[in-house]
Amino acid sequence: MPKIDLSRTLPQARIPELPNPYFGKVRDCYDLPDGTRLLISSDRISAFDLNLAVIPWKGQVLTQLARYWFEKTEDIAANHVISYPDPNVVLGRKLTILPVEIVVRGYLAGTTSTSILTQYQKGQREMYGHRLPDGLRPNQPLPKAIITPTSKAFDGGHDEPLTAEEIVATGLLTKSQWDEVSEKALALFARGQQMAAERGLILVDTKYEFGTDADGTILLADEIHTPDSSRYWIAKGYPAAFESGDRPPSFDKDVIRSWVVARCDPYKDKVPDIPLDMIEKTALVYIEAFEAITGQTFVPDASGATPLDRIRANLTRFFTT
Image (tube, rainbow, N blue to C red; front, side, top):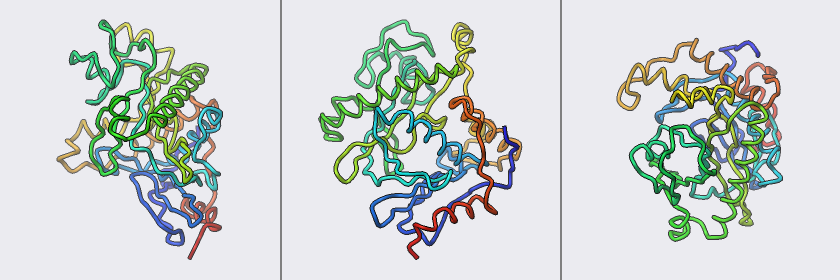
């Protein structure tokens, strides 16, 4: 595992020579004149509607991990990727993102208000258009994987639970669109679970985003099966944890989130500066996840005076000014 250089980070990728910028929570994007889009993954880590810190190599890890999965699943679902001009950068087709987030779950797990475990423990059995049987325990496998879709809040609002019937009835998606994305999502999840199991991991749940290109073709977008979009457990620790009622061992991507919550209410209080040892620990967690999931050694690209200098050099052919 590489030594973490805390000074070598990509806080932002603001490149004035690139046109039509859009700056998201963690990605800086540019729409090019030919209808394609550059998506640059920064090293920012976001939670509680705040940018909490900058984590060395995070952007490269997530870009390359999504690349691994896009390439392993393109026989199931075509995706938005055209090429990778830089380890942190995707050149992709510009899509209109469908207004439904597709969450697939294989286990009774989760902690948020929209998670099926939270609702199940409150006594609900009908959720997202599915009926779950009585007698399930926390973190138990579901009888079969299910889709628990939510509305996609583009304006900063909260995602809301949906059923397939509501999605079609309200016109969020057509019947044929829903049939296509739900079939592809379940197939992607099955492939992900199978490959994760071969690596000694359990893919517990994940979310997918789909969009349509200029011709109306549905493509897989954003990222796939990364620790930021998925929950993974370590398979060898699962049986004992399940029997004892403990949370199974996982890639704890919430290292910084947990540190913050233990010290303040991040929605009300000023968040303290994240110490360097926490930043280093989080960087190592991302690298560990990459190597465990792919079976490959993570090789950081240390070329260029800074990551931004390297990215600028690799994107000069796209400059318009």
